[in-house]
Amino acid sequence: MKALAEYALDVGEREGATYVDVRIIDQKYQHIQTKDLTVAEFNQGTSSGLGVRVIAGGGWGFASTAKLTKQAVAKAVKEAVKVARASATCLSEPVKFAPEPVYVAEWVSPHLVDPFTISTEEKLALLFDCAKTMLAVRGVTLAGGSLSFIHEVKYFASSEGSRIKQTSIRSGIGIEANATDDNDRQRRSWPNSFGGQYELAGWEIIKRWPIKDHARRIADEAVQLLTAPVMPKEKKDIILTGSQLGLQIHESCGHPSELDRALGWEINFAGFSFLTPEKLGQLQYGSPLVNLVADATEPTGLGSFGFDDEGVRAKRTYIVKDGMFAGYLSSRDTAHLVGLEASGGAMRAESYAYAPIIRMTNISLLPGNAGSLEDLIKDTKDGYLFDINKSWSIDGRRYNFQFSCEAAWEIKDGKLGRMFKNPSYSGITPEFWNSCDAICSVEEYVNWGVPNCGKGQPMQTMWTGHGAAPARFCNVQVGIATAE
Image (cartoon, rainbow, N blue to C red; front, side):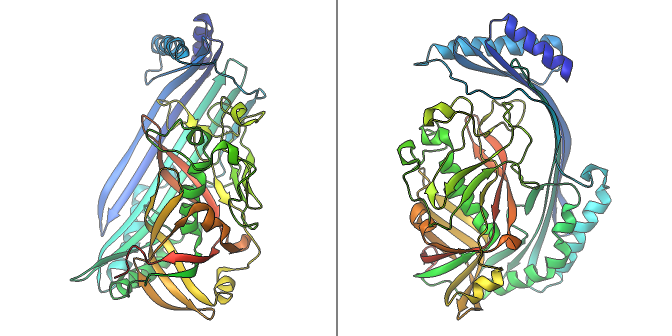
């Protein structure tokens, strides 16, 4: 890796680039999905290649190659320089690059057991044991399970002098039970929907998230949902469990705080943002309880790393502080546009084949002091508890939204009551966050992983994290998607 990276830097400088950085990535992956007692997907393999960015003539250029030979690397670097010179002709002013210290470092993500040392037989046995438990419940017609593992080694080198090697392991685990009758089909998932929970962790994830212990419960709940009533259309106080709140943060906080969206650079594809620069430091985004941070240093957060893909050290910055809109996700070439002296460290690429763009890290809601989820329920007189996402919709500015969950329970005088199916709630982002009047304590805090966030042209899929503890929101519109 090192020798090829140095060669790429030399070629770039000889071609006249004023800045060059190189990423060489070697990855292996394994994705397993089961349906009932059969293997529905078993996908494993490796990927390796080099991506190079340059500034030449004041513009950006990027190219990549899967062939790790000197000839292929030189060709890629020369192509990147040509692209940079061409792009410079379209710019009103040359790229302005925020300063960053030079790093010579090595970083390894925290993990206990490399999941690639665990046999396929052991992994399948875990998923099949869960399936047997779920299928034993009358009314369950499909039992699903999934495991996902990625081991990645990334080497970064820049013409400024940084030399950084990072090794990360990302793991995912989840189960779901589907129940069907003559009129309906319902599902329950654990620990989260759409594949489960994803973390920066190794095989030890199975101890943190013991799916076998929850298989019977979610199967029973899936069957109960078949005959559960539909939530009425009304306004009520609602509590969101951590997993649902994680997706709420992702859609209504993470995406609008991406500076390229706020500047209109993604408007033709990913969309715009209501958090335009004149609102920075001026907009009361949420109640004083609401503190949102972009934190790439959280130990198990799926969006954590040692350094981003342009060599900026991982950091923690406020997006919202005491309810006030306080900052953006930024990069070295956008920082100056909102008066920042340094990048926020949010540049990442899906693989060596893509140029890095501004992406979420771990966008997290800091815990409050409302105690446990049980305490928060006891403190709620009349409302609903929403659990685990089923679907969502949000406009291009990230302003108007609607979410539906797998299940909800009414809360009456501090106690959980009836279960409701297909529950939904909707709102306007700043109004919703200003209605937050309680957040559970740190003991309930979990960093929920989202492994499939899409953005960019060409589309890049990124892994992000969202730390959250259950929280309560007041006078929220519910039932609008399903009311009869």
